[in-house]
Image 1: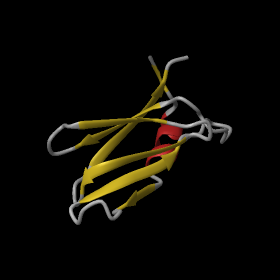
Image 2: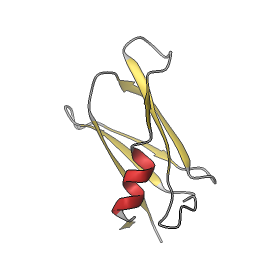
Image 3: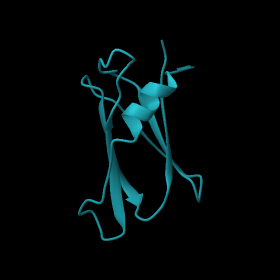
Image 4: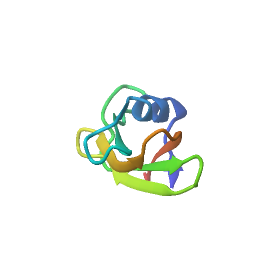
Length: 86
């Protein structure tokens, strides 16, 4: 699996952290993966890693490059990796 360009990862991953009404202690991360020319990257794997526990939640981007990962512990730092097999 080849990792996408670091710029695309940052552009895709650090878009939004929103605490949704799942429970008071959980939230979600939403974003959009794009390539260097700002075109959406469909079918990319998005891995959200809890920096305290190391637990991983995965999602896949849709045809518009958008993704949502829900059920994340609020008040925690997460690292996000975006990759796609080419």
